[in-house]
View 1 (spheres, rainbow, N blue to C red):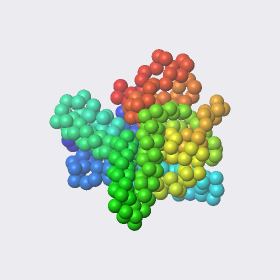
View 2 (view 1 turned 30 degrees about the vertical axis):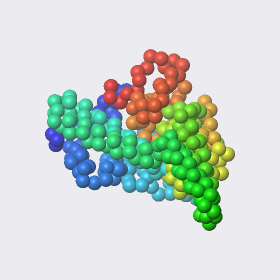
View 3 (view 1 turned 135 degrees about the vertical axis):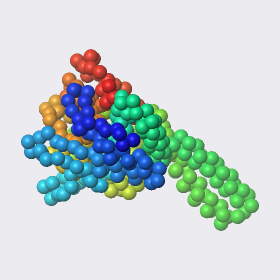
View 4 (view 1 turned 120 degrees about the horizontal axis):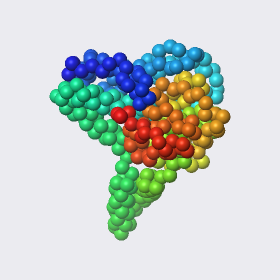
Length: 339
């Protein structure tokens, strides 16, 4: 395992170096520890310790290193801004972690390919096994987070039928105290069942107004951002939704929500936000200039002729989104990071 070493610069799709794919020999020791600790914790710790990024800007020419919370710590000169403070209510640590885990998967795939290239097949096999374990865990966490809406709705409907049957028996036996309790339980189950049915329908027939890589503007807070993930409905925790005032939205949580990268010049503390579709609008042509964010290097494959970002193939596959062809881009490759 320790014989594998990925050089300091791995060729990117553009023929230039991709700093984000750098891997040291010692990093491979991580995989021997994954089984002895929580997979999610290992992934997060590895990502936050090993993801080194550098911004290419005159104003931000220092090396940025991730930490356990946010890439850009401190007040960044914006802490006194009421506008930025309100925007940060939509900051999502779970979305940020999700993106870093995606990077980790890409890096594992790069390690596997490299091991095969140098004919270290045992190492490649072990890496494949770790990748399979991590992908299984990620799938489990995603299902737990979003819920299996169709199955939950069916289970709730069965619970409702049982409660109604119990209510009828209580009335027939003239147990009115029990009947009162069951009547309240039925009312709650009816509300829950309706909500889950609506969520299940949202997952089945969702239509997204925005696409991966598209540059957008926040209608309320005004910052520029780029779409890097999407959910048919809000999949954040109840505490996050309360903090972000999701219930005050005209469509509430039952509308598409997007993971967006926020331009670091707009607010270096926000970084990744989770935003309702109704709060986003397509960026104007004049707003599609330089966009700075440390995650664009591994999530996107440059820009298309419309000056939106082109998502890598793995990102499209993650969200089951088709390749978007801007006018004049028909001859470009598919944006895979493994080509």
